[in-house]
Each structure stands twice: as C-alpha cells, then as structure tokens.
Length: 343
Ligand SMILES: NC(=O)C1=CN([C@@H]2O[C@H](COP(=O)(O)OP(=O)(O)OC[C@H]3O[C@@H](n4cnc5c(N)ncnc54)[C@H](OP(=O)(O)O)[C@@H]3O)[C@@H](O)[C@H]2O)C=CC1
Ligand SMILES: N[C@@H](CC=O)C(=O)O
Image 1 (cartoon, rainbow, N blue to C red):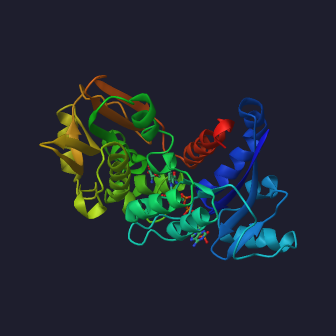
Image 2 (cartoon, helix red, strand yellow; image 1 turned 180 degrees about the vertical axis):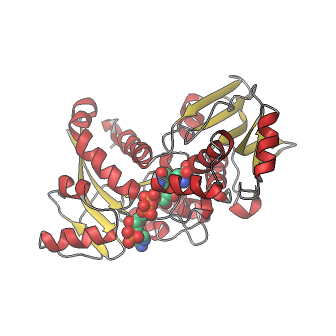
C-alpha cells in the first residue's frame, strides 16, 4: 500500500469539504487504488495544526468553517499552532483567490515545491498571476502540479483536453465556466428573481468566491479560460491580455427581450484560434436553442472543444459546489499517485 501525507491550506467551504471526503472515502481509496491518504497538517491565517500520525478527521469535519476552528482544535487537543508543518508529500491549496498578487496561494505552493512536495491547486490566483514561475519552480524541484479544481472543478475540462483529445488539435474552446453567474442568470430569466437575491443564494450555497466581484465581473471565468488556453492552446496570456465583461450590466429589459426571442443569456468564455493567434473573450452572450450549451442552467457548467479530428466535443454538468470542488482536488491527488511505478 502506497502511503501519502497531505497538507491542506485554507479551512473554508472547500477545504472542510475536502476533509469530509477524505473521511468518507479513505477506505474506498485504499481498496480501489491501493493508496492510503493521511491528512497531517491544515493551515489557516494564524498557522498550522499538524500531526505525523494524522489529524482527527472527525473533529475537523464537524467544525465551523474558518481559521478560528484550527486555533480551537490546537487549544482543545493541546498542540501548538506552528508556522511550518511536518514532512508531507502533497499540498492541497484552498485559500482565497487573489488574481493580483496570487497570494497567499503562491507562497504556499512555492514553499511546498521547495520541500519537494507535489501540489494540487484549488485556488487560482498563483497560477493566473505567476503561471511560468510556478511551473519553473515545480520542475526545478521535480515536483508535480495538478489544478482541476481551478479549471471548473467538478466539470472535467483540463483532463478532457489533455487526455481524451490527445493527438487532436484543439482549435477553439467555449464554456460556461462559472456556476455563480449561471445561477444568477437562470434565476433572473426563469424565476424573475433580482440580481441581489440570486447572488445571496449563490453565496449561501458556498459557490461564490470569497470576493463575489470575481464571479459577477467575469474574472473567475477569465481565470479558468486563461488557464485552459495556456495549457491546451499554448498561450502565455495574463488577465490583462483578455477582453472581460461580466453580467453586472445586463438589464431586466434585455433579459425579457431575450426570453421573448426564445433565447438565453449565458456568460460565455471563448478561446478561439484565428489567423495564427488565440483570441480570448468573456462576455454575456445571447444563445438560441440550437447551441450545445443552451440547456446548461442553474449552477451547472459546460464546455465545448472544437477539434480538427474529433469534431465538437462537449461536456455539461459538473455543478459548482464546495463538495464538487473538493472532489476534483481529490481526483487530482488520486491521479498523482495511482500508478505506483512512477512514485
Ligand atoms: N467555493 C467553490 O465552489 C470553489 C472554490 N474554488 C477556490 O477555492 C478557494 C477557496 O474557496 P472557498 O473555500 O469557497 O473560500 P472560503 O472563503 O470559504 O475559505 C477560504 C479559507 O481560507 C482561509 N485563509 C485566508 N487567508 C489565509 C491564509 N493566509 N492562510 C491560510 N488560510 C487562509 C480563510 O480563513 P478565515 O476563516 O480566517 O477567513 C478561509 O477559511 C478559492 O481560491 C476559490 O477560488 C475553486 C473551485 C470551486
Ligand atoms: N465561484 C466559482 C466556484 C469556483 O470556481 C463558481 O461560481 O463556479
């Protein structure tokens, strides 16, 4: 049995759900993948709780969200909160996304690479702001990086592009990549809810970003299409190279008109190869019933790849949720270590 020790940074909606999944699924993972996963440290704003024997998943699963719970855990179990953690194999990074500095995820990831650990990124800031550096440092330390949860999480996107479409040329990608805005647009169009009410519900579901402007202004969708284009279309773009429009300027009148025409507004993120260049834009777009993504409503997401040899390949579903994001990170951890001969 291969044993791998995990460090988690960020004990929020997704971080806690990741711990719950470890608790629920560790037996199945042992049986199906011959892999024993042990959570040895969790980091919050004030430091890490850590234990070489493994932390108590039951207590953490039942704790309130937030860094304070880690301090409470340390206090109750009489262990110190520390600035570093015990030896581990992989970091799962789930702190808030800051697309400007990339912090705190960037420092967490670089420290892990220097400790020769692999990284599974759930946060997007470090990858968006420091894409090349992150990969260079990983390579220099012979560490590996996976980031399914940062590229639409429960909706498989990167894996399809890398594995299922290997050998084909991807000439375009089009997606509904943000569950919060898709939920808001669906509620406004189908249920006549106000923008504010729908956003509040998305926040209650735990799917909106810590700063919901990232969702509403199209930045989260931009991060995801940017990472997919950099990985699958060979670009090296930064956010400032993209044309980004959110859903905050759409009026109720525009929505009503659109509905009368039998169409829907969707926040589409597109990366298209044209004239030897990749053009990326994110904008609310009116689509009609013939469009492959027309039926993608609520918190669901969807992606269409245009290829030279396999035609159009579409995946839909992968509803945004903390559990879905945590499951995408768990998938990455399993896929890092499932082929033991590489480890
Ligand atoms: N929610 C979702 O469905 C998805 C989220 N993501 C990404 O996952 C990440 C986490 O999202 P989510 O769990 O929803 O966010 P939350 O805001 O619920 O949780 C973030 C946690 O990180 C903690 N934190 C803040 N700063 C630090 C720091 N310097 N060191 C350690 N911990 C810190 C916060 O602590 P405190 O309690 O003190 O504020 C909070 O507990 C984001 O980057 C997001 O983009 C990706 C896919 C889906
Ligand atoms: N805020 C995002 C979740 C994380 O990527 C969304 O609404 O889809």
